[in-house]
Image 1: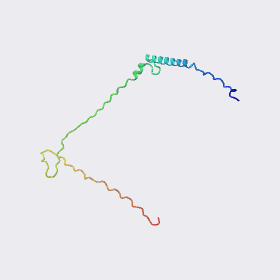
Image 2 (image 1 turned 90 degrees about the horizontal axis):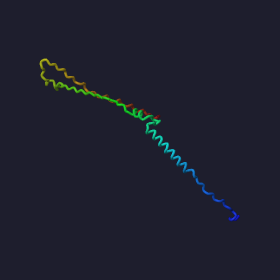
Image 3 (image 1 turned 30 degrees about the vertical axis):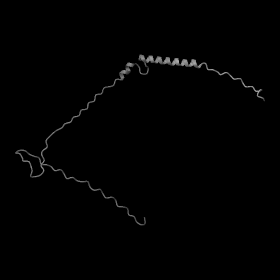
Image 4 (image 1 turned 135 degrees about the horizontal axis):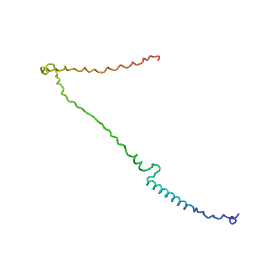
Amino acid sequence: MSPANTTTPPKRPRRRNRTILPVAAATMVAFLGMTGFLGAQMAEGKDPLIGSGKQATAQAQPKTVRKEIITRKEIIKQQAPAVSSGAGAAAPASGGSYSAPVQQSAPVQSAPAPAPSAPAPVQSGSS
């Protein structure tokens, strides 16, 4: 077999897809047409999802909540009776006045001591 006897198949011409340009143009026209149509509907207030625009704005009004916090502070000022420190230095008693006896507070008690801990276990030589 010599190279002259072998025939190579002829090259086929490259096939061109001529339908892609019209399909792309038709798709763009359909998309832009639908976008314009829906935009015009929304501008007129005929949006199917939210209904008319007037009802949507009526629901959006916030409710006013009034909360009042009233605090009262009363300060009562009284003069405390003078406390004497000692038995002999008492204030002179007036004719009809009565003074209440001074009460001493109870002595301060401390907390009891903690309980002693348990003794160590007994260890024997056999254990």
